[in-house]
Image (cartoon, rainbow, N blue to C red; front, top):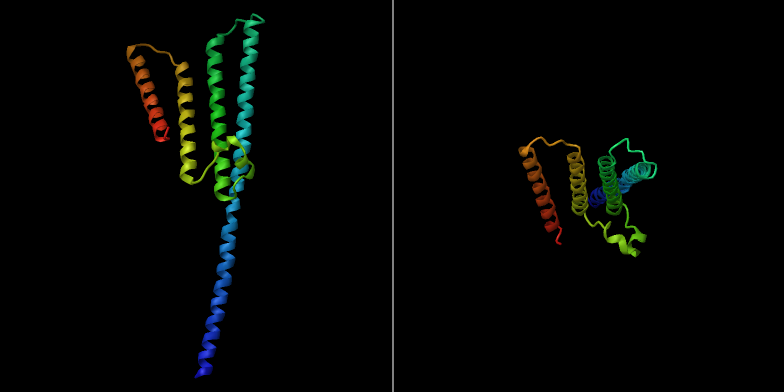
Length: 189
């Protein structure tokens, strides 16, 4: 009888070791799968760089148009409307680039590792992310700013034909202002 109990304990111990080994291997593979996030980090960084370059080229185009208009005397187009529209468009691109940057920093720090160089920098508080909710909040605020900028860019191109349309514009600006006010208040400022 003691021999049977000994065999059962040995079998139980062997099963626990097999189960433990499989569990250890699976958990290790699962934990290392977090490095897939690096694909999103690198892609977001490339997207951000692209948008910064495109926005800067748009700004250079504005400078060239200004040069042509004032220095060369080429008054063939309405400079003011075009310049304001292009400047707002470039700002919009810069804001979207910032969203991608915040996203890449945030998911890297949340899933892979803290960025050692960022801890030493005074400017690191902007990109400091401690939770997924904090990352989501920061991105949401910048996206709302992108939408506000895009809205004003669209308003510049709209013709207004009456008092009712002007009232709609005023109401929409009030709505945007309230949104920004509540965002600011929610941020604890």
